[in-house]
Length: 111
Image (cartoon, rainbow, N blue to C red; front, side, top):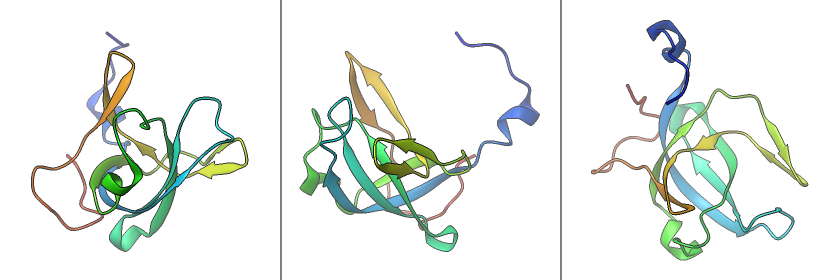
C-alpha cells in the first residue's frame, strides 16, 4: 500500500471521463504503446501514451470511454507530449482500462 494521503490531497486530482477519438502506433516508445487522442468535452482534446497494445486493438479503442487524470503536467515520451494519464488496473503486466459502465458526457468528473 502507498503512503496515506489526506482527503484534501485527493481532491487535487482531476479525474475525468473522455472518449478516445484517435489511436496511432507509437514505435518510438521504449515499451509497446499507442498514442491516444481523447475528447474531454468542455476541457478539450488531450493526448496520452498508453502501454495497452497486448489487450487492445486500435479499432477496439476508437470511441471507447476511459478515465484519466487531466491535471498532471505534460510529460515528454520520446517525441510525443503526453497531456493526461489514462487509468487502468494492472493484471499480470497487462493494463485493463477503467471505464464507465454506461456512456456519459465527455469531461464528466469522477468523484
